[in-house]
Amino acid sequence: MKVYNNIDEFEGCVNAVVTTGTFDGVHIGHQKILSKLSTVAKEIDGETVLLTFHPHPRLVLQPDDNDLKLINTIEERVNFLSKQGIDHLIIHPFSKEFSRLTSVEFVRDILVNKLGTKKLVIGYNHHFGRNREGSFEHLIEYGPLYGFDVEEIPAQDVKDINVSSTKIRNAILDGKMDIANQYLGHNFTLSGIVTKGNQIGRKIGFPTANLSIEKHKILPHIGVYAVDVAYNKTYYKGMLNIGIRPTIHNNDSLTAEVNIFDFNEEIYGEKIVLSVKKRLRNEQKFDTIDLLKRELNADKIMALNC
Figure: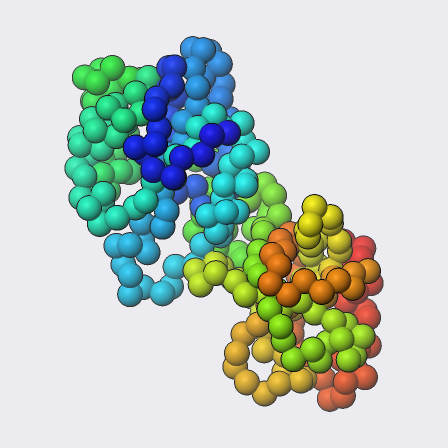
């Protein structure tokens, strides 16, 4: 997969089969679109092109709105997209100026003149252009005029529930990782840089790596989770605590820290990636450190069995 950090870097390809969107989460609905993209490209001896945006449009258009939390960082999104068989991934910087393109300008200037679209594959209820004015009906109208075909993919359902990035975010915020991971089609990923903490964990036999996480990255609900940890191309099991550590600290500062099993390297300043598999329990306040250690040992047994 070739990655471009601006649409102007893209020099074109043969019979471009294109889709566009934010693709936050790269969930099973997105995967269905991308699978269709590859199928169509093979049918017409073409190449697949995905146009996405960074930062997320809402972060640009509503900069004072701090409620939006994203399923993926841009690096995580690229990693998941690289597994979908895409030939060309264009990550175009989203700006207020770009947002002012009308639907016809987007089609003419971006899809046709920049990308050379021969076939456009879009998800259900896709909108584009200034104020999201463009729709599937507009594309059907513009297609013959500008020489491309359009195909809309129906909404993807899981047990008759329409899958969306919003529903996945809500499941993550509720700590319902079984639902979130089912909708994603893969385990939710949490990545961050390891920072130095107060090292209390190692004093009680459960050393933790404290994570510095990007501002707009979503975090699961406060609690303890079974995770797989990727570091330096090696995978380990572990358990993640998201919370305020009430037994040890009395403050409201939310932390994410992971105890990596059978691991004793110093990794301050290093990046690790967590695959969040299952919520084990709520965060609790224990009367003594011994009771906390007993619970952590029980948590570890459960995490090892996940």
